[in-house]
Image (cartoon, rainbow, N blue to C red; front, side, top):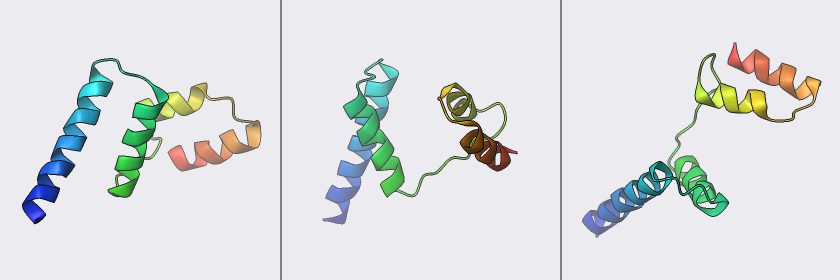
Length: 74
């Protein structure tokens, strides 16, 4: 049974990666990928010169929230 679950996990990860790389930017696919990463303990910090930091810079946060995120990034 562990082998089956391992194969399912690997297949799901590869399918999500393939869809995102092929330009399937539907919110539902991105949300599944986000939840998959979260469920597997994969986290990222918005460090300088990272794509996550660039995304945060584009989002319409108010100044207080942006300052809090800047503290985390630095």
